[in-house]
Length: 244
Image (cartoon, rainbow, N blue to C red):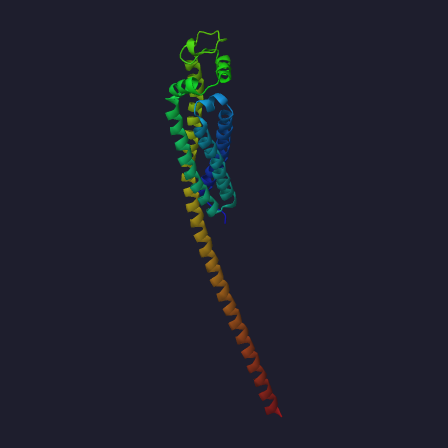
């Protein structure tokens, strides 16, 4: 089966383009999620689950892109349908990651304050104060003894981690937007494929019927030729007998 026509070819081209974009965006989401996942300060501020959701969304987006690419190149309706279903899963995961990221960004200061006072070891506090050039969470009184800066850590830490959450939310939103476009193109391509399959099936059926009709005509002609040959043979024998 080969899709014919200007608009079907355009739909197929856009589907392949979006499939490639899906794979690239999925890889970008995975890389950024891994960067956050291996950042001990991000994990200390409760960003583990949102990062894992974004990571899974990126992986599923790659599979959606692969299904769409295979379905478009091989013109396989089943692969196109699989791509659409996978894209729906990506939309759910990406939406959850974006919503979770925005919710976390509003509570970073409170989460950091709670962890600083209850669960952070002195070594963690020292590393954070050294990285962000700050002392204590809300005031220098909460810092370790060797800290010299007068700037509290709440502002630089919340700003830096908030940027990460914002980028994560943007990536998740971008993934969801790509899926919506991909599903639209998948539906167009699947419809065109089904129409083309029906046309090909109809042509094949007509060709089969015509071939059967031609075979019947051939058999009929051969039978008629054999009958005429027998009659001619009988007539020849009669003529020979009458001469004798």
